[in-house]
Length: 311
Image 1: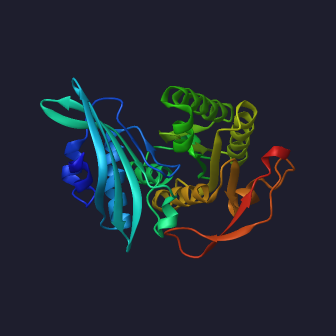
Image 2: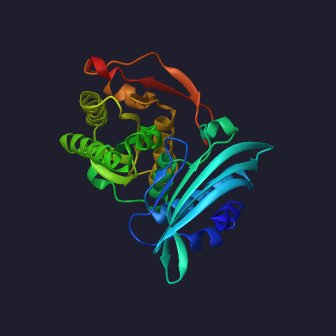
Image 3: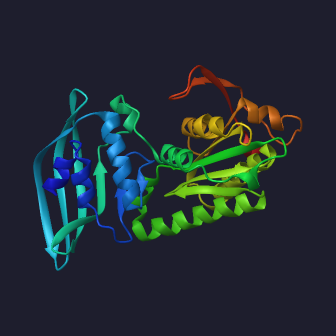
């Protein structure tokens, strides 16, 4: 586990060697958006976050480690020095002995506050999905309207880490699977296309802005009816996909992800373009517009909250 602490200083190669490639790898952070159940995702995001936040040093105060056969686990109480200050931190790791080497299968980091309170914006699962899609450029032809546009919908569960800790992993996985079924069922009802999913986040695409918004409303209403514990953030934006592919993957998808990142739990936010596209009917109701700056994008953007409980 001490080797784990040392890799937080930015040695990505050493960090990569620590992880098991077996199924079931999970890495969890304090921020509600940090739940990664894939080794490659965990490795890549930790490496990216190291760049986001800058160098860090962990000062171990006390800890304990145990072993039972080929399984070991360790917990440390530490302070982390970064960004000009010190923050209390706790790390728990579960290891599996593979070819005489201890490999991480689970890591849980707890810093006690949200990432943004450090004064830095760290990469989240929404952003990870957006970046992956922008790199892979999947075919969204089936979700393209006759005019060449696609409405992109991002979802992300708020407070998933805290909910998992409160419920325990078994009950949490049941909640997560139910949440995933709700998202996929509502997308199918509105002829949506699942572009990518990761952990508790989804990127969906629709040929109709109205269908996309119906899907978003359906997700929130169904989750509220089932259990108020699960609170999902949803953001939508419509962008050109056929004639302007570079802009779509370079800005359209990113803008939709940024809109979702601005939403709170149980909230649907849409860009002004989505609002304009669906405003010809009385099917949806919106709150007053808000002007926001979005990370990595120039200027201000007008966003609208959907009054989905009235729909």
